[in-house]
Image: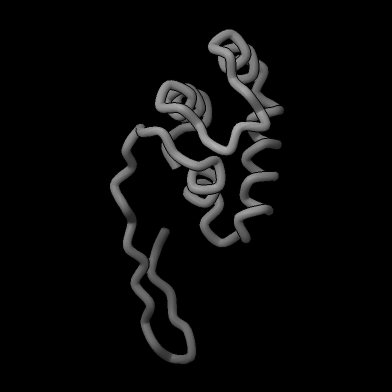
Amino acid sequence: MGNFEFNGKKIVRCQKEFSIVTMRKSELAMMYFPDSAPDVARRNLWRWMDSCVGLKEELKQMGYVKTRHIFLKKEVETVVKYLGEP
């Protein structure tokens, strides 16, 4: 996440420190895909998660519910374990 120019003005993006906490799925998705709309970011995150067999299996074992609107702290930790920190 770097700086860029827009209409001749330098724009500085601030990178927040990442914490493993319970959070909305759209919130985590937007961290991985900051330039996407929330619904697109969620779909993209799901595609990444869906293509990672180990991640899907580990989430399934811990009782992950795809339709729930939040990731529990342990689920966030597991996503980051497989996909890396956003």
